[in-house]
Length: 597
Image 1 (spheres, rainbow, N blue to C red):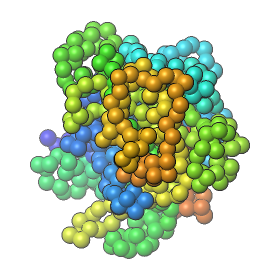
Image 2: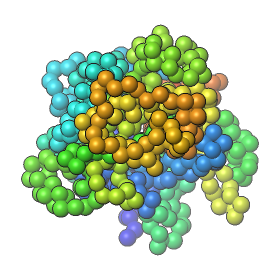
Image 3: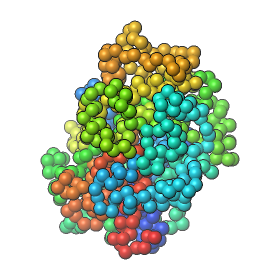
Image 4: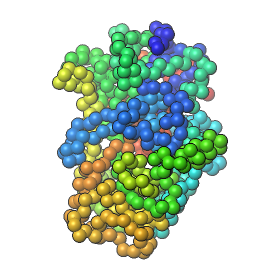
């Protein structure tokens, strides 16, 4: 079915992910007469169970999924020759409709470190509060209580998380804190809050809470199944967007191009992969890359597609007791599913309103742990972490699962650990493949810097010690652990129960340590936190946009999404994507003379 196509809007968004929904929704609310169009390659998400039922989030990552794009990286010797695959949201609402819904915020100092006028934490904290309704606890100074995005503890309590916190505060000798997302507290065990509405039990995403809730406004339009090819210019002024029907979303459609014009502004909001490649296809980027693809250069901006960053994630499975409450039976579609759905529909409660992630520690090593870590981490510790007590090396967590079609049906739990400020940097560029089609030249950079693997190696050992002491522990799923040499004290096996809290730690040999490092090179993955490829920095420092999000060298063109982030942020990135949306909406409203109070 073709859309009735008006040929011109005031503002056109190239991409309809988290940030685009926030900006478009806010601008439409500030001035309902603004004609706004969102072009999104993926499909609508309105009230679809896979998007609104929190427990369904892992199904978006299945290999057959069309709600994410699987970006295929270049093979890397640091990953033992492996080809890394990095998914990103591909639907209206983007990552906010497919992510794991964990509520994490970085230290306020991360934003100050950017050194960009108007983006200091002092300016951003009011916007962090504006976007959320923090349902967990009233009257906390850094949280908001009247915003569109709901934050709660979810609709069901999982005992595994209490066990993780209990062992962490005894064996691991860390304190407990109720809120480690107050923009400064870290290195304490805490509950992990969620982007789930505590009343309805539904996911709290940007599509439903900024865009779909304005269905009455016919001036705010979303065209799904539309892939943006490039920006159209008259001289240096961006005036339109060329797009086609997306071949994944609309496989039967022929692919003629259409052009829609924008009288006031075009906002590229296609994420860390889409935004730099749209700019490059539009002639904005490094000369050598454009030349190789036969694209005429419009603006020489060598920073486009550079500065790719992410967080390095490892998930390690353990066997859980038969009486432990986990997500496994629900994910397998057993009888509990029907009962849970009925409860969720009537009260917003049950495991349906759960993501299986209920506890975490934003971890920094103490002196003893630092000594136990490989010395390759020491220079990075001294240079970046040592004198910044709010900077977190890694998040350790306990979760339910994993979702698996190959493991025998029983209860499982997983240790997760991911580093928040890895040093390694990658890149994302367009390329032409051997058969003449357009492809992507994507280098993750994962583990390129020798310091990056060290906290992962330590994270395996420390989380294993915590899990061994949890009441629900019944051993390791050996296939998901390092391949330790025969006779190793670290060998994985089933167990009848946990070890004593005061039991000695496993002693690892040099061969065991090598097995752990090889394991990490074989399985480390994206944390789905891609950012940085259209960095908000000075042009001289390989920046792509200025502090007002304007693309250097042209007019009427901005970028607003995670690609603008100049330095990594110590958080799951949904919170930052929402924040960028709120700040971008203010900037655009100011540019257009619209009152945004």
